[in-house]
Length: 253
Ligand SMILES: NC(=O)c1ccc[n+]([C@@H]2O[C@H](COP(=O)([O-])OP(=O)(O)OC[C@H]3O[C@@H](n4cnc5c(N)ncnc54)[C@H](O)[C@@H]3O)[C@@H](O)[C@H]2O)c1
Image (tube, rainbow, N blue to C red; front, side, top):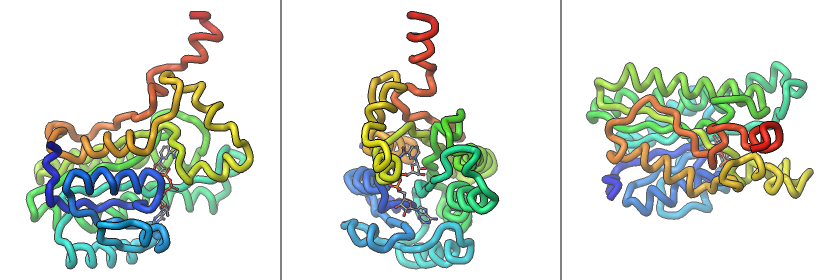
């Protein structure tokens, strides 16, 4: 149904919460998956995939990893830039070192993943690139450096869409709202009820699941979205549609 049988899909952050859901949906669609992460233990827990362990903030390491992947499995038909990280929750937590780190992982990491594959992808006749950004790339919900990087990722996807479209390459973005993954462990260890609390801000009355994010990525990666390039799609239980608490508590609707 998705037209991805035997297609080669490269996924970064594959050992994380959303990454594991991505691996599952692409394997179910019949794709060959190269799972990338910097954590070898997380990669070892995956089955049915080729793996590549490298640090995405490192240009040379990313280039070497791309060469190894190309030699082993050929040009990717799909690249999913999913790796991400944040700890600096507000402006007061942003130091120069934090800024550099969160831009490096969340923005430069996207470039480092994709750019080394572009010549091979072009030669192969094209492909589909999907980045996992965030609603933080569309509006401010905390984590300033991360948000700037996630907005930058949308800009990079648009650059790819416009400049590489004639090479048959599409580039799109999904912008998840809150998702219960290991990325929330540090917050939940301090405030165990946080998922219940954050759900109140979402029009659907709940947050989205890793599987729902992965399914949206699958759609944008597949020929089903063949006419779509350069878009940023919220997968956010309605968060970006408007402010439900404002409507209820201030307007009284
Ligand atoms: N969980 C959420 O609420 C949420 C919301 C919006 C967007 N996102 C985005 O979704 C993506 C996946 O997040 P998740 O919730 O699954 O988090 P996660 O922490 O479970 O997974 C992230 C994965 O990325 C890997 N990674 C991080 N930095 C890396 C680097 N420099 N080099 C190589 N690998 C690296 C980690 O090892 C980890 O396996 C991220 O881009 C995140 O920003 C998450």
